[in-house]
Amino acid sequence: MNTVQDGYCYLASIMDLAINKIIGWCFSKTMDRSCVLSTLHQAITTQRPLKGVILHSDRGSQYTSHEYREELIQQGFRPSFSATGCPYDNAPIESFHAISKN
Image (cartoon, rainbow, N blue to C red):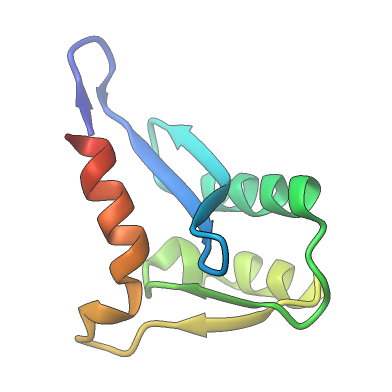
């Protein structure tokens, strides 16, 4: 997303597909590990998910970083990543982001 005052801004978000609701988000000037970790911590704090929940993401470097993957495992999540070249895995969240940009 491009803003006149700040230039590019990024939105990291976690969607609960069972209820079709954004449960964690971070708006930042950089899309990095700290932004996605902040999103993850917000989702954990507000939703208190059970251990074993599957958390799916794309293969962006911030999501495949050692720090992020370790945090997922420590929190009891089962990480899931998109298949290479398969855009359909992330269709719900990509649709949300497309709508928010408009």
